[in-house]
Each structure stands twice: as structure tokens, then as C-alpha cells.
Amino acid sequence: MLRLFITSTCLLLMCCGGDSGPTNVNLLIITVDTLRVDHLGTYGAERATPGIDLLADRGVVFEQAWSASSWTLPSLATLMTGRHARSHGAVDDRRGVNQEIPTLAQTLRSRGYATSGIGSHIFLGKRFGLQNGFEEYDSELIKHYNQRRESHAQISSERLSDKAIDWIDQADEDRPWFLWVHYFDPHHTYQPHDGLTHGEEPIDLYSGEVAFVDLHLKRLFQHLQEAGLEEDTLVLFVADHGEEFQDHGGWMHRRTLYEEVLQVPLILRGPGLNPARVTQPVSMVDLAPTLYELLNIAPPAGLQGRSLVPAMRGETMTPATLIAELEGPKPVDAVRQGPWKLVIDPIDFSHELYNLDEDPGEQNDLSKDHPQHCATLLKALRAELKQAEVGEGSKVELSESDRANLEALGYGGQ
Ligand SMILES: [Zn+2]
Image (cartoon, rainbow, N blue to C red):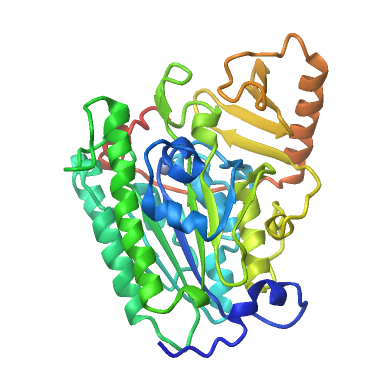
């Protein structure tokens, strides 16, 4: 395929070049719903995930990445805006992304990119604001989802990859593009897949769903390669949150901010990026600034994360304070500095302290032994939240049918 993006192969060099202009490299964002880090081969799972592992082998893998929350809407809104949840405002079922906040799609579109999204989850419906800025958006699988209460049991990864491949094949060769594809299958209710599901326990079914998504992601990655687009395309792969399997006594997600729901796989692969593994803790809020730098596009004002490009080059960045937020009947905030993590109820201030290096499963609450660490982390959390200007999410009206759909997903009473 003829491409005239002469700057694309030196993407990292260009991104440091000041006003040299956009690299015109394509951007493919792949998000997978409900994907636990420990189910991917590249993160140490026994069972390989050949598609994602292949991307990881050739990309930059972040070993400790936090989402912004433990459910879809605030997490993906942070990815698309580069702002914390309280700032973009999409924090519950009745509030979508604040319309005033520029999104990746809006900014890239204003710089000449063709922008397209393909969704598969109710929260990617237009009214929640995650479609803001996209020139075109394929909602077919979302509509299907909304029309049938049981449709969260539908399998969509195969169709998503088909749609993504078709879209890429018809894309205008004279314009760079930004395509966002959201995969849904690992979300409960977990469906069995012939040849991929081994066992009947929830974790076995979940593992089969992950294998199924991986199979179809591999097809998409292979297509990029076969179409000669790899050297022109930056790929970001990330999950919106993980999933609980009674790690802390519960199931699913949107209930706590422990690591099984907060840690997400994060991989970037693209022209000029050498394969690497980054061990420094990073956050979902850092991704928009990172993408803008890699694409050499001036970011909009108000971003609250920081570019991870230095870490991708192997430099040690100043340790960051990571935060995550969960609103709802039982709100919770989390803050991390180095190995120390504080989980706190913002209403009654009950809290737990963990050392993630020594206790990655968060089984040993050290808050009584280390009150000074608790105080330091609480102060850091407040400072971060204070910096994040509070934004009002756009109002979302829910019908009875919407409510039933959300309840079927385990989101009742939020
Ligand atoms: Zn989700």
C-alpha cells in the first residue's frame, strides 16, 4: 500500500522535535473490557495469549499500570480525555463525559485525522459521551446490545475484528486515521467457546473468553502486518479494568479498587519504539499525553497525566502519585506512591494500607502499623484531587430497559 508518511519511521525522534508537525502516523486503540493482567501470557499467565503476546514481544509493555476506576465509563473517559474521573464527570450511570472537554478524537480530527470508533458496550453508546469527536462511529453492536436484555451474552469479538479490518481496508490512504475498537467478551456473563474453554468454573469460562478475544485480536494484528501498515501505525492496547474472582470476597467489578480490578495490561507498539518493559507504576490518565507526544500533536489544555515517553526510552521518571476513584453507594478512592497503596472511603475515612511489593494480593492491612504512611498518602491524594478541577458530567436519561440492561451486567443500584 502506497503511503507517503515519510516521517513515520522516526516517530520517536520527531516527537522530540518541537514544532515539526504531526507525524501522520495512524493510531489504533484497542480496549478490552474486564481483562485481568494475570490472564495474559506476557504478564506471566501459564496459558499463552498468542495474539497479545506477539504485540507485547514487539512493543513496550507496562508491568504496573492502573486504570482510573474499576468500571468501564470513567476508565475509558479518562483514556479519551487525559483527565481524572472527577474532572471529566462520567462517574455514574446518569452522567456522561462533559461535552466541553476535548477528546483524543476531537483533537486528532482537528489535525486532519479520519476518526472512527467501533463499540460493543452500552457505555459506549452516544449519550455517555465516549463517541464525542468521532467523525464516524459504528454502534451496530451497541444497538443490538440494547435491544435484547440478554444480549450481554452475545459474542462479539469476531465481528469487531471483521469490522475493524473492513474499516482499515477502506480507509483513505491520503489521510492518517485514528480507529478505536472496544472488545467486550470477557465481561460476564462468561460464554463457553469450543476448543478454548476448559472447565465449567467461572474462572475457566472467563479464561476461555480471554482466549477467544485473543484469537480475534491476532487476526487484526496479522492484517495490519499483511496490509503493510505496521510501520505507519501506533497501536495502544489496554483494558478498562480487571475482574474479581473472590480475591477479596466478591465477583465482577465496580465494587472495590483492589489490584485485581485496578491493574490493567498496557502495551504500546509503533514505528520507532523499541521493545521494552517498563516497571515504573503508571496510570490510565497518562495515556493521552503519551499519545499526543508520540504523534507530535500539541495537546489540548487541561491534561492531568504526564507523557510516559521518557519511561519508554528507558529513563527513570520522577515517581508519580497514582490515584483512582469509584463513586456509588460505597465510594472509594485509592492512592499509590511507590509500593505503598492506601484505599480509603471518602465519606467515613475508613482505610487500608498495603505494601504492593511485599503483598501484591493486598491481604495484609498495615494501616495500624504505619499511620505516617497513611497520612502521607492521604495528603498526596487530596493534593491530586485538588489539582483536578471538578467537572460536571453531561446528564444521561435512562429508560426502564436501560436500567434492566445495566442490572443484567451486575450494575444494579448504582
Ligand atoms: Zn468495563
